[in-house]
Image (cartoon, rainbow, N blue to C red; front, side, top):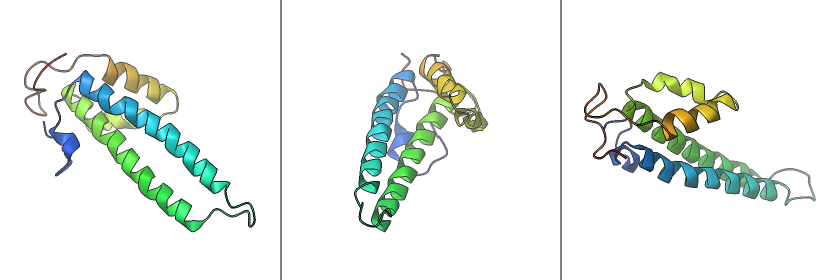
Length: 125
């Protein structure tokens, strides 16, 4: 179950669809909440019309964290499906990539047993 990321709690989880959905849905909610919060904070300083620097810094840090979580869970599922991380490139295509992530990684079963990326998930759903 090695996803290539060292020392992460995400890389120690079982590789299966349930884990994907348990992480992906809250991630999606966080993205919407975060975007709304940053938009609200950016509009907060109406006197100067400029966005405060701290909003940009917090936004950058949280964005990097959320992007890392997104790619970590996608790589886990790709490896569970015995596919290379190169398939991540498809996930960044607008609309088509999101549909592909939902169908390919959220609906299809992973490899039963060992594959070229490890022993597979500890259980299959």
